[in-house]
Length: 406
Image 1 (cartoon, helix red, strand yellow):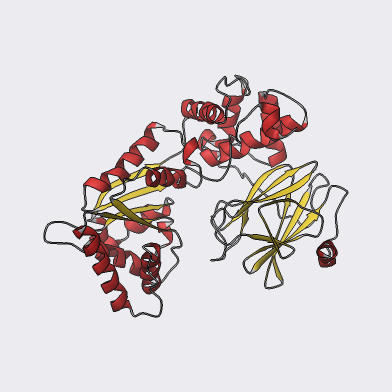
Image 2: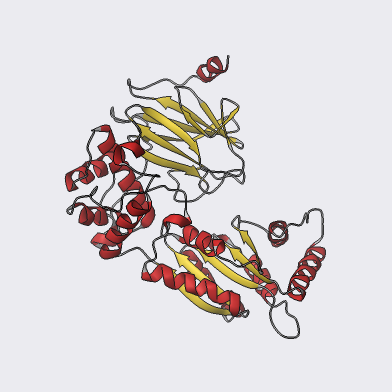
């Protein structure tokens, strides 16, 4: 019997991959979406959406994009640590061009002609820049200039900037006054409050096929809020881990005691947004001598050189380029949420989260696989070496993976 069968779910309720089907429309999420929608009928100025890590920006953007009419053409740029020329190339690539080996003036001319052509056939063009907090001042100035492209009647490029809270500080810097003058609407997406935290959990359970909402007992919601601070991504991690633990223990419902036990396994402290005090809430531990109850060790290598190691107990952990990933891999070949590891007493399952460049295990492409000791997971130029620690500290040997291939 699987996790889904045990709880009678149609689909996993607390997935970490953004899924518009599960979006919960709190008042602030609905308002942020309304601001984005305003770009369709108001062509002048920017809309800026900021939010904490895990607040739901990406899911919100996907929901917005999924509802656009056929007369809207859009591009999403999320790799933002770029030069001005690289940024223009990224924008044009998203619009279907192959703009490489061209000078900046040629790129600007290509984009200008494209925008005018789209306007002439009645199309609206939207540029969404995600992770915009990483844009340099020069690229932000380029964005401002792009927003000025116009016909005799109106601007032809609508722009949405989305990013982490640092984006607010960047935009308020003295050198970007001209850009800030073009910002029409700003909205900061904060964590959910206690009421919305409960409604969010019940909503996701209902979408997953359990509208009765009787899996989490009444006393769990306050505990969940205390340890997550109402941050959707943390709520998903905690609730999913609690369900995995309950499934392993053959329980049909989850109590506050179960949540406390799961929090202890995750190694979390109370969240600063729910207590007013900051306490460390590590998703992973990088001790050289791990505790005996760790089940998995992952060593990350780049070009054969070790760069980090991580130890995990039970739970689900994301590998990706997003800063909130439990295993952060800083590489252009790695998607923001590239893959996930699901660790249980039975072992560790690897799953590709619909990444752009895919996942290789022992040089073979996989979508989902139960890992074995010594397996080598390849993500672009990085390698993750898996060690099964259920029987004590395992010694990782690259030859173990080679023997599997043979």
